[in-house]
Length: 195
Image 1: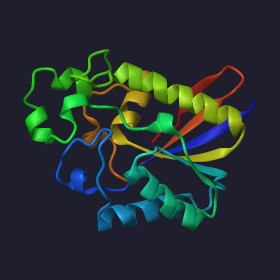
Image 2: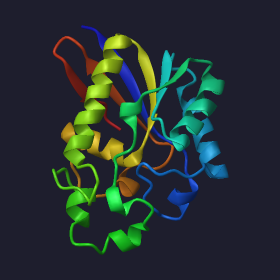
Image 3: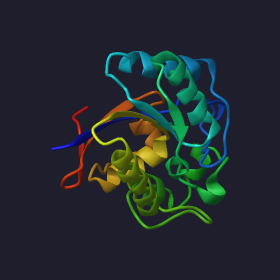
């Protein structure tokens, strides 16, 4: 059976991560800690035989990907479909302010069709990310792929695979974390490795 191995990494810490602001499709630069976390991603995967690095188009993910590319000496490319979940009018706002709103729990802690105004739902985000992974797996069949993307996109994608919790992305996926995922092409299905 053909298996493609994904290492799903959240980008290094950014200024807005430190300030606890929602970024979504907006962006902020990596902090000095974020640069170190990006290097640590590469260090952890040094002996894994990574074939390619694929990044979200957002600057924070690309900055992390470039650091990994330099350390791992592997090709790096951007996949637009791996962009972070669009959080609509909540983008740029502080987490503590948004957490007081009535729909916060359903939108950012659950897997549902609900979204903030002008935003993307968790279900739609999952479907978009899953489509991208199917295409990447088809292109790199049997390969080992490092994917640099985002906490909320990661939460939505994994929730759609059955990993549902009542916690937000900040609580579940730290900057620089790596989640291992196997894609079995014959069936096809994704298998989340135990953490």
